[in-house]
Image 1: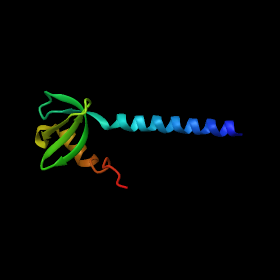
Image 2: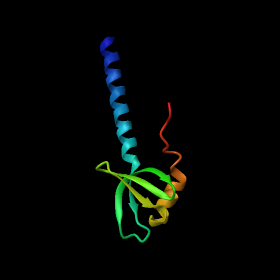
Image 3: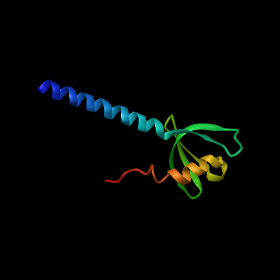
Image 4: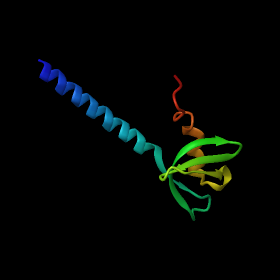
Length: 89
């Protein structure tokens, strides 16, 4: 019985780990400049004062004027930024 419980706990932990990894991967996206010349893989951090903060894969934060991003990226920010807000405890 204990062995079955332990197996279930291990399976649950592995499932949670995979879900967390999938959620983290889903946060990364390719951002494109307004004219489509430049792209960057980054996570959305925040929008404040017309500046979009993005976290690059190396952990550095860059700030880009919102109007310098593509229409698709601006739409994504407008519709998604509240869904990705960190949870408060």
